[in-house]
Amino acid sequence: MKKPLIRIPYTTRFPPPTLIPSTTSTIPGALAALQTFLSAPPAHPHLPASTVLLTGAGLSVASGLADYRGENGTYRVHAAYRPIYYHEFLSNHEARKRYWARSFLGWSALRAAAPNAGHYAVRELGRMGVVNAVVTQNVDSFHGRAHPEVPTLELHGYLRATVCTSCRGEFSREEFQGELARLNPVWDAFLQEAVAKGVLGVEDPHARGAAGVRMNPDGDVEVPGAPYTTFRYPACPRCLGSSPTLKDGTRGRVEVDNDGAWSPTSNAGVLKPAVVMFGESIPEHVKVAAEEAIDGAGKLLVLATSMATYSAWRLAKRAKDRGMPIGIVNIGGVRGEEAFFAHLEPDQAGGQGVRVDMSTDTLLPALVEELRNSSFREAGALPEEASQENEGAIFKNMLQ
Ligand SMILES: [Zn+2]
Image (tube, rainbow, N blue to C red; front, side, top):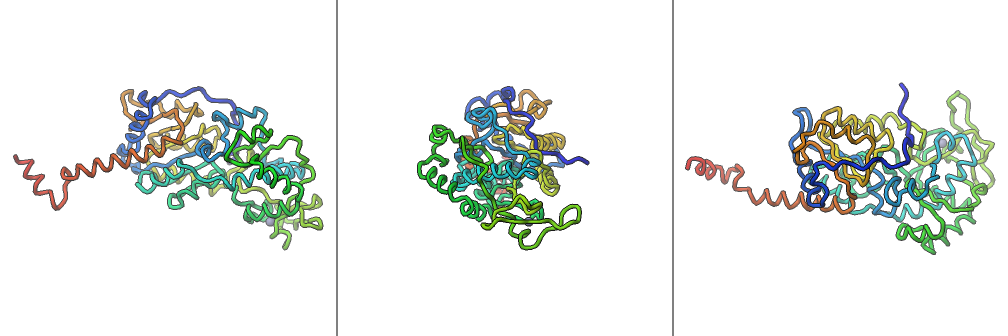
């Protein structure tokens, strides 16, 4: 069977959504509908009560990272943007120099960025027992940092490590950055200067724009006129020590220059970021784990993604096929979203499905507050509930 590939099927925007229910046009209306969605009993007896989240690039915009299709998204401000493809990275030394040069410049900003209130709201939803798992398309590791106790499946991998395309060994991206700096001192000097001027920071995207610098969601930075061809990158340290066995059974050849930079006379030992690149298959164990995360929940709440990548969309489709109610919070349209809301009763208040056309930035923290307050209200109504202390009184009231 052919494994699904990461593709970019659409770079344009999807049609604007239909709000569900129509009361979600205001923040209080949206909060009420989401609360109804999360607290509704399971739609079918075979479904658990918990919710799984499926998140995307929009969630990290408040951390200073770009998204793809949002207001200042990469595809909108940079129409010609085209990420590197897996086959291109594997086969082309020049393409790798360009990739690592841009990644070298983008890394310091990515490292300086941190999870935002949206990620911490997810942590609170986990603590409340409302959310039991997260599937994210983001490669910034923010979910794991904000809520290590709520399991996160990183559907498209992570930038915090590099992985060897020969031996599959994983290495720290941070240490790799140090190697890149050592091998490319002129680039390193440029980077230090750019950081000092605030051109590569996450604090001020406008300063980046003014300098002609563009940062993309996968942590790569474009600097007009940069001499990518001079860039050098290290070889896999493990393969360098002991040459790997290639797919055809022969021993791989890993050679480096005097400073330890990967030499094009090699045919192995190439490191790539531990993300699933466009045109690359999602590893089977990740695909299975993502499906298990969907199957382990009774509802799916999609946050800050237009689900343009098929790998994400098919998980929502799977949830729909299992009879799970689906909620979507995203500014702008989502791929094929009508199908997720077909057959809802017209007067349902959110228990069967929710569609909110707003940013998660303020909505998620407000939702946490709302859920807290409502549980306090329930706690205030405690005498109505049976407990050993008050059950006699309840029976007594019933007989009066
Ligand atoms: Zn290796």
